[in-house]
Length: 302
Image 1 (cartoon, rainbow, N blue to C red):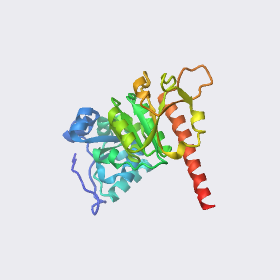
Image 2: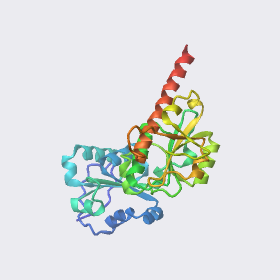
Image 3: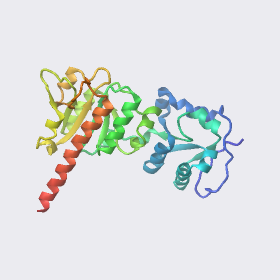
Image 4: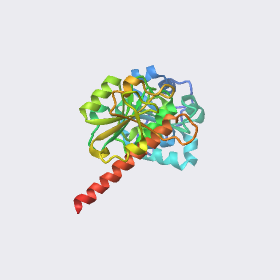
């Protein structure tokens, strides 16, 4: 079976026989990207599944190196068919393949997978911060599902960026990318050391809230409901810093923050999962910022 690469554009109607050799070098190069070492060496990562690939095609088509799809599934899946049609219009390399070849690359891609360049990721220098901005930050978060959910929530709440602080899970891993459901391609997501993070915060005049149940002797926690009622919340940009799933935030890190906040717990649970905590916190902060911003604009008009 032929595995020729066809550049779709003028030849969009050209027929390419589906790749059918799961042991070919091309297929191995794709599956190798599940290795963090290989991703760093090649400066590319994988986007699995229709939702992630669709968002990559929409938001960063120039950074997609290849798309592979199950040719038979594309005949019956309207979603995959639309993604491929859009990719062809944007001159992205697309490769039909048999189901066994797709499974050799990924067992979780639901029939379509894209190879994406690191150039799709935005760094700290490309983030625009204003006093209305909200930033989500994660300190040494390790679970891929939690990390991806934080990115997705940050996207939904209109955050200006997501910062992975310290020794976090690699957000270019396929599991994290899949968990973001395409949000990785919507907003800047980048990694900084703790020192770099607080330097960046200071340079951009961002107020940092440590999300922690206990706080420290120097930085006692305040209820989130109390913090969001403060009238000066929208006077500057804000960042919510969430801790490691098992250990939370270290005391020395909390003490570097402007304030500690905690989500009210009315039952017997000691704490909340970091993904849940981030969703509650970011939505509360975002709602106040958006509502206050709208109120200020109405006031200016009158």
